[in-house]
Image (tube, rainbow, N blue to C red; front, side, top):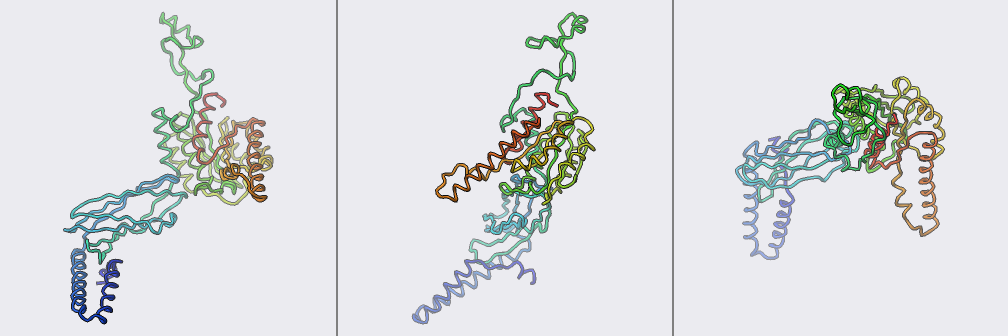
Length: 444
């Protein structure tokens, strides 16, 4: 009986019918001839409610439902959620499905309505886009079932209190990996860059074909085989690539619900995977006022798993980033000349100049690329036409900030540091382009 009351629900249609009956009862006081008809309507209503309740509750398991999420979700991507519903009743039912999504999404009115025929199976798909990493807890999958009359509902609950972890964007990583294997990276904006000269990484000797560089002819091998043979070179491998992520207060800035830190983490995951695919060694350093996480550069099959697990729990803080401390941390882990890709942000030229000495020290030993972000919120101000003094003031300030960003690019180039000035939306593509450019120009 206790379970009966927990799953017994009265619908809005029930109350509408009840209001109509009460109105007819009141009306019958003025028109007594209506009263016999009202009694019949009341009796019919009671019998209908009784039979609908009996039809829904006579079986303990009339509906079977399940939710499929997977063991993890991808941050910043649309993750597909699948709901499977089976009708075990011997008649058609109306079903209202409410999935209790994690509180992080702030969905309070999400529901799906469907009609299920007898013994019918249906799958319902919808997507969720998390913008924060961490553990998300789903509530119950609630299915409210009624007959075609729709006066009474019976509630079924499935898959209550299921937890799932939200990791950095592994879906984005797989997409870029697939496109890289199929040579289709240009479809998403990754540029083809002409290589300058050729690598000195020898791979094998093969026969000369028209179009080969005559400077690669191997005369000794040609003499032995009585045929022109050339040396074939490949891209240099096993180069060290470190992605360094600033976790300081400057990375708390949000863009489309995600912080700059989360965008940097997603881009790091993709770049490290592509570097390993190209036989380079990928490593990771995170820091703020001190160095937090360090992963030495490797190209082993489990390196991507280590990077993903290390990035899962990273959080930004409100501390001022210490680049001098970072310089010491890089020296401790990067013994050889490496490609250092630093994800950080500068809003003013003075903030860069305060730390330029540390960047110069890093750039003396390594190839340093500094990735910083465009403030996309300024676009609307820069493109507006001011109508009053206040708007003129706002646009002037916006132009000043935009000019400072351009000056930061010039300042970095002046000290021999490679800048990547990008919007959060284009971060991954722009960083991959810079990596491919460095490989093609053989700067490392």
